[in-house]
Image (tube, rainbow, N blue to C red; front, side):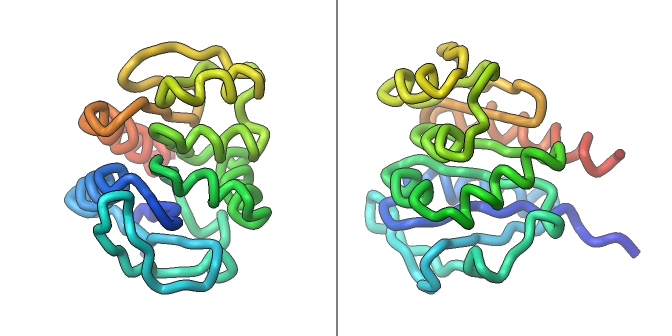
Length: 176
């Protein structure tokens, strides 16, 4: 019996509330197993708008081999997430295994710090355009961009397209 499709959502303080909760609920609706993962051993974090989330696992308790994808939400959380060597290794391992790596808004900071931008076409919140291009990406201003196994979007208003692409790519991955 095979396990359900498993997706990690990375959590840190000041996450963008919609960019965590919308994908979390949407993927659960599709029957995927969603696991929230954090880098500090804490059990609860608050979003930019104060909405709390109780996390499932610490980065020390997970392995890339046990997941089919990862979502990196925006807000100010990515600036903290990218300080964790283990978070960056987790994201890079998923990428290297050809699994879905999706970031929205400021989540691109994690992609840059993990060394995944060079030669890729990406989008993000416009404020980090320079960070992505300086990391070697070609920046485009579109609601969702897929380049290989990387999926990127700009803002909460892009969440429907972002989640549709994630669901589509996870379905493709599972069929392999």
